[in-house]
Length: 220
Image (cartoon, rainbow, N blue to C red; front, side):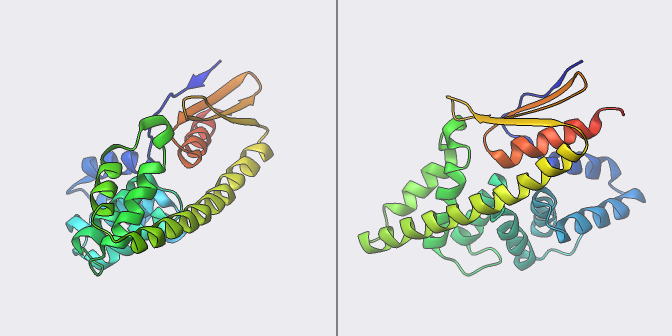
């Protein structure tokens, strides 16, 4: 048997969002929101980013741009590519934070490189370059240094997070392998008793989260 989901970008937040839409106006909407808040509070980056969207738009909660920016930043620091892009917009436009083109440039750059090997630099790369051209050369050097520091911090946290998933799945009897593809993709495979779960993703965070969900979906 084989369960395979090939992805370019899979977010647990998508599932949350779909459920939230179905629950709109219903009693389960409140419990769903509380579940998202709980997941965000214990460090789930997908939940943090989704909850930030709710606070930004005032969807099911009182609009709070400061809280939205805080949650985007928390998720971004865990390697969440969508949150990295959104915190960059917050800094560029002064949404919930002081307007700061330098910080906007930093986060646009980090967002662009997160999965850029597979998907290209995209819109985030264009926005980074647009701001970068307006900065004095001395500030550009400072931006590059901060990008390097933040990316190293994010990679270290990302590794800690996916190591927990490896430990969890290994204890459940899964054999895990990982490799980076020539196309820049991040590939993870889990095997157990004839069952296989795989992912093909732009970064390790998405790759491991996807495989974890697949493994948990297999019937015992």
